[in-house]
Image (cartoon, rainbow, N blue to C red; front, side, top):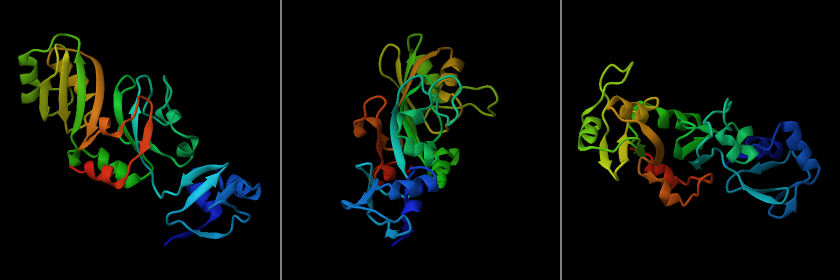
Length: 237
């Protein structure tokens, strides 16, 4: 059991500064179990807590774990430079509680993007030492050949890499389509590997991370969802 004052709870959930959260309570905008709260100093048990702020329900979460079906032309950055940031696709509360992408997808790459405010989780999922496999659907500019698949499976040399990098698996899915599974997580790896193998990546989509497939979440492009523990368990290699 963990008890916190109501203003601290609201702040931890991303509703704004402590001062603003106190004003929310004082203005009668916060309810619990249908009862309007009158004191922000009240210590409240956070176990199973559901808040109502401006009439909208918010379940208390110590940390949030999110999957986003990222559209093209969004940057995976808290400070985007050329395109809107992926945080603009989420409720404002997540910006206040410093949710950030787990790793990055290029602005023109679509598909599964994990996001969280749990630092150890972000570090663990981003670490190449974890060897978390990621599945990509790549569209090649030139037709896919058996030789291209063989090259990607045996390994290609990338600039600034000490040794060749190979796909864990690589399967042709169409005249220009490849399904590539990687576990290294290097910068622009799929695009660079295709270029090193003499082709060019014209479109890229990440369809799964670990055992968690984007299709199983039922998210349309631009939609997001909270991840439950059973989803997080699928991310463990």
